[in-house]
Image 1: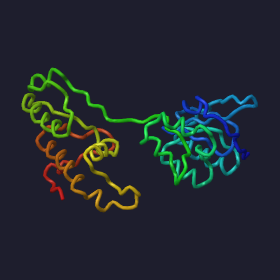
Image 2: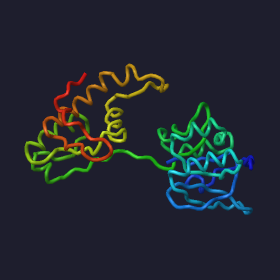
Image 3: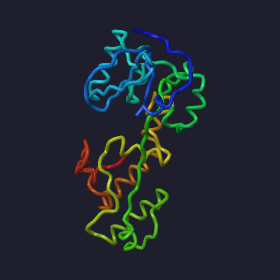
Image 4: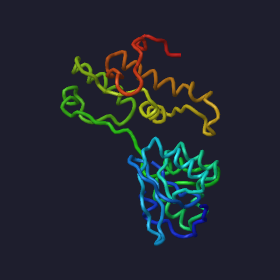
Amino acid sequence: MNMKMKRGRLSSSIIAILLIAVLAGCGNGGSGEGNGTASGGNENGEAGAVAFPWDQLHKKIQIGGSAGELPDVARLDIIWVPEFQDAGLLVPLDEQFADFDEVVGQFLEGPVSTAKVGDHYYALPLNTNTKVLFWNKDLFAKAGLTEAPATTDQFFSALGKLKAANPDGWGYGEPALQGWNILPWLWSNGADVLSPQYDSATGYLNAPETANILKRLREAYKQGELADLNKGMCRLPKDMRTAPMR
């Protein structure tokens, strides 16, 4: 059943429950196991979480929207937000809660931006991630290095020294060619794949900054300074070591 939620304060339960979103209605929970979560309230206003398999949660929310039986709060993938907003399933938090600006100020700007559609915010970030460099101090000392690299230039310089000091090893291992692995390299070096409006790749995906960092990664791989990318969903083609970069 569709119900408008009363204007009030964002409770800690909402913040603590990826993205979490308040849905345009309240409904009954279901049963299941997994890492997808939907929460509905009882007559006392207490929230109760119900777990669903992640691959079923999206469809359950769609069906619930059609039937008018939505949970109050759900854990969502960021790519679901514009879809569910367009279907009228999400509540604009900045209109629903008087203290939204106060609460949203506690979060990082990047993760918060993934919940914005048009001029309104429809969710709050539950978590985010970043790349972390683990380095072996003994191997670094053997290569004459005293600290972890702090810049891209220092990183690639260190790879050569680590390889020279340890010919049977590598300087660095990147486990896959997925976006999770490669995109941070682009963004950290002034490159991107799409325009800020997300409507064109021209001038971004083929920009000099993009080509430069990809060339540097490939060159390090050709020199044996990067481990084979033979894990994850995508394997690096064997002929990439000699394929021309355009």
